[in-house]
Image 1: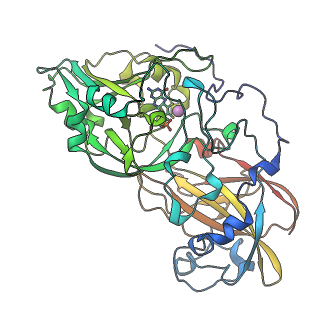
Image 2 (image 1 turned 60 degrees about the vertical axis):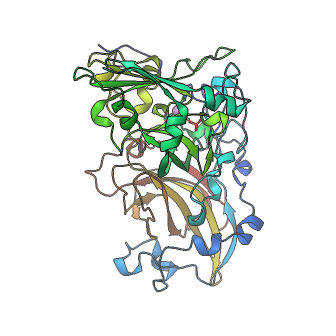
Image 3 (image 1 turned 180 degrees about the vertical axis):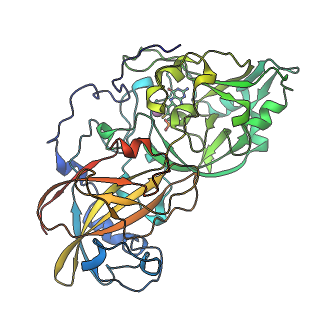
Length: 431
Ligand SMILES: Nc1nc2c(c(=O)[nH]1)N[C@H]1C(S)=C(S)[C@@H](COP(=O)(O)O)O[C@H]1N2
Ligand SMILES: [Mo]
C-alpha cells in the first residue's frame, strides 16, 4: 500500500522557498586564484596521462579517440581564474550551521583535485549534528560504555561492546557519501568522500546466530533531540535484507580518515553503506535487530522514500529498492585559461555512483538539448568513490550556460542525470 507524502524537499532549512535564480554568483567563487596557483592543481588536474597535446580548437567538437583522451591541451597555458556558477546556496559554505536534526555543513566541492579527493574530516558534509541529549564529552567513557543491542529473531542475543568492534576494525577504504536531499540549495555540497575503518555488519550479525526466519536487519541509531525539527523526523533507522549484507555491504565503522569519528559524524559508531545514499548510513548506532520479512518500513525510510527513488512511500521494508546512487556527474568549477592568445574554458567535474565506474561522459551546455563527448578522461578508480573529469570548452558568446552531463550508454540507469537534477548554470564573461 502506498501513502502520499509531501514531495517538497525538507533537507535544507530554506529549500521550501523558491530558488533565487539571480542569487549572488560571486559567492560561488571561493576558489581563489592564489590557492589555485599555489596548489598542485595545475599539475593534478591537467589530465591523467602523458598523451600528446591536442589542438584546443578541435577539443569541443570532435569525440577524442582513445590515444588523445587524456591529452593535456592546456600544457604551458596560463590560468586566468574561474567562471562562476549561478549559486542557489542557502547557507554558509564549509562551516557548520544549525543544531541537531537541522544542523548542516555544506562541503565546498570547487577545490577538488586528483590529489585531494578525500574530504578533510572538518569539511565533510554534515546532515544532522550530534544531539545535545547524547553526552559525548568524555570520549573514553563513551567508548567504554557504548553497546550495540544485538537481538530480535536470533538464538544468541547479546550486547556487543564497542571494544569488540574496535578490536576487529580494518580499513574499508574510501567511499563517497551523498545525502539523498543534496540539491541546488546546497550547491550540491551535501556530498563528500572519506576513508573509513570498521567491520562488515554481516560479521557482527553472525555472532548472534540469526534464525532462518530472520531475513531482514534493522539498524538503529541514537536520534532523540532537545528541540523538534519542522523538516526532519527523529528516529534514524534502516532495514536491510540479509542478502544486502556482506563485505561489500554495510559496515559498522569507528574511524574516519584515520581518526576516531567526530561527534557530528556518529561517534563512537556509525554505519557506512558504500554506494548508497547517506540516509542509510545511520549514525550513533546502538541497536541491530534481526526481523521478519514483513517488517514495516521505518519512519526514516518513509521520510527518504522519494529521494531514494522509491515509487510512492511503501509501507513494508521489503518493498524498498536498495537506496543506491545511480551513476551521476556534475561540474564543480569552470576554469578560464589563456592558450595561445585565446581564452579557453576548462570544465572540471566529478563523477560518482553506479555499480561500476563510468568511463565516458557527455556534456551539454544548453540544458540538455545537444551533447558532446567529454574531452578529458574520467579518472575514477573505484565504484565506491568519486573521480574527476575535465572538458575543454570554447564558448563563442558570453552569457549563461546550463551545464548537464549524461552517460552515453543509454542502457545505464541514470535517473537523476535524466531528470536534469545536477544541472548547473555558469556565467561566461569573456570568450
Ligand atoms: N542517527 C542518525 N543517523 C543519520 C541521520 C540522522 O538524522 N540521524 N541522517 C542520515 C542522513 S540523511 C545522512 S545524508 C547521513 C549524513 O552523514 P554525515 O552527517 O556524517 O555526513 O547520515 C545519516 N545518518
Ligand atoms: Mo541525507
